[in-house]
Image (cartoon, rainbow, N blue to C red; front, side):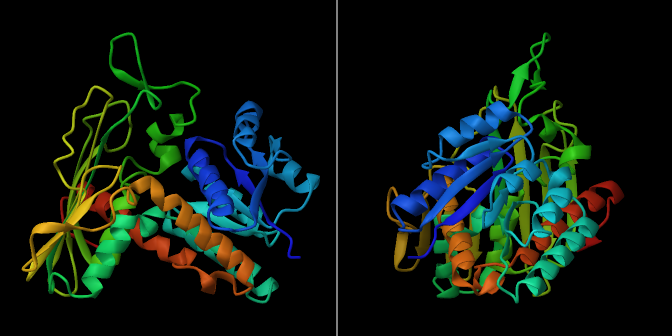
Length: 369
C-alpha cells in the first residue's frame, strides 16, 4: 500500500486556513491520500490552532522549519509567509529536495525569483526530475476563470477585442483596526501587519490581491508587452498603493485595462461591477464581481446570457481545492513539475507586469514588460 503524501505548512496565517480546508477536501472528497503532519510559525499558538483544523490528530506545531524537519520527514511543504521571506524559506525547503508549493508572488523581485528557480532546478536535478515546485496562484483554478478560458478557446465570443479586470474589496476588520482618530490602521501584532509595509510586501495591493486578477488576464490574452499605470492611496494605512489604473498593450495590437480598488472596512463597493469583462467580435464573457461566484456568456445564441458555471459550483474560494489537488497529483506522479498545470516559473509573469506598472507610475511613461 502506498504511503500517504505528508505535508508541512510553513506560515499559519489566514491563507493557511484555506489551504488546510483544501487538503481536507482533497482527502475526503477527492480520494487523495494526503495529510498535514506539521505546522510551522514563529507564533506557536497560531501553529497549534492550525494543527487543530487539520484532519490529522497527529499534526504537530513547531516554531521553526528546522525543528519540523528534525522531528520527522515529510514529502512536501506549503510556504505561506510574508513576501520578503519567500526567498529564504524557499531555498531552505529546496535544499532538502522537499516538494514545494509557494504562495504567490514567487518573490518581490525578479532577481530573487531567479535564485529560487535556480534552487528548484538543482532540486530537480538531484532527484532525477521527480521534484515538484509550484507557485500557489489559485486564480488559475477559479471555476469561472477556467470556464471563461474554455469558452474563449472554443471561439464562443469570436476573436477577443479587449478585456477589463477589476480587483476590488473593502478590507475587513480582520485586517484593519481603528486608531484613536477613527481611521483604519494595521493591527499591531496581527498576521497581516506585514501587508501594510512596502519593504515586506514589495508594494501595495497589486503585488498582493491584484496578482489573482493579472493571472486570468494572462490566461485569456497572453502576456502584454507594454504598460501605462497610475497609482493612488485611498487607504492610507497601507504604505503602498490601494488604487491602480493600468492599460496593457499586447503584441497582437489589442489592449486591456487592469484596475485595483481597495478601501477600508467602511467602504461600500457595489458587486454590480464585474471582476472581468472579455469582449469579443461576436459576444462577451462576464465574471461577476462577487467572491461567491457567478458569470455569464453573451452571444447570438444567448442574448440574455448563459451561466458560465453551474449554480453553487463557482466562486473564488473553490479554487483552493483543485490547486492543492494539482500539486498533490504532481508529487505522487513521479513526473516532477512537468505534471503541474503551470510550472513555478510561469508566476514570474505576474511580477513582471506588476513591476512595470510601478515603474510606469513613477516615470509617467509607457514601460516595457
